[in-house]
Image (cartoon, rainbow, N blue to C red; front, top):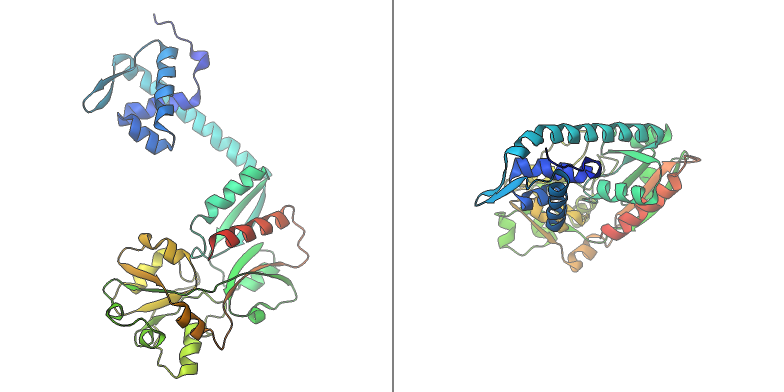
Length: 324
């Protein structure tokens, strides 16, 4: 009988053992579990010491489990699954004890907002959980009624946001414009100018609260007596989301202008689309007789929920650091 020291078996080593059995490759396991490859090797060596057995045989196609590991696998697999269930139970308990916040923010702003915010909450060790929403039938009313705790919106003016029940905090001004169109769009064979952009169907996607109000490019076209034809779209109550851009702009006809740096910084996630920053001269010309759009943070006046001020400050910092 093997001389085993099971008391020192940790969940990470057990998990790695199961993954090695299933994937036959230490590098694949490292990538799948998002841990360094040397750590996989150390945990495998630790498991070999615990079970007093080599466990795997190295062959051309990878690591092949030996007969003992084939018998061991279903038992360790069950142990790992029990550990995951215990972790889920603990997470549910923590979630029930934490304060739930409802946040409204477009996914056009920051690609990794959920991960970054969750990381900040974890680092601060605060009992906060949150639900992220991107749509609302009446955002101001939902804020005033406490259905949404915090909202980030983009508006050219705070006039549309005025409500005695709400607190309005100005955040970052958006001073760049990004042109989006198909890689095969005929506009790319011409000088990219505001006048030439106006010759094509235009996707209005600034995400203003008043869906009927013209966006800055439409206003500019009206001022300059340029013909601006809106592209037929059905954005619904949710508004435009990042992963929908290709759907509306891949027809070699439609163009769009957006003030959000994410569409430029993560343009590799929009295959088939050309994304570029409009020249500073054209951007200044467009905003010459109107205000640059600005991000605003909205919350209900007098709301005294625990940790809400911390959440406001953290989101403000994330926007300041990640939106350009």
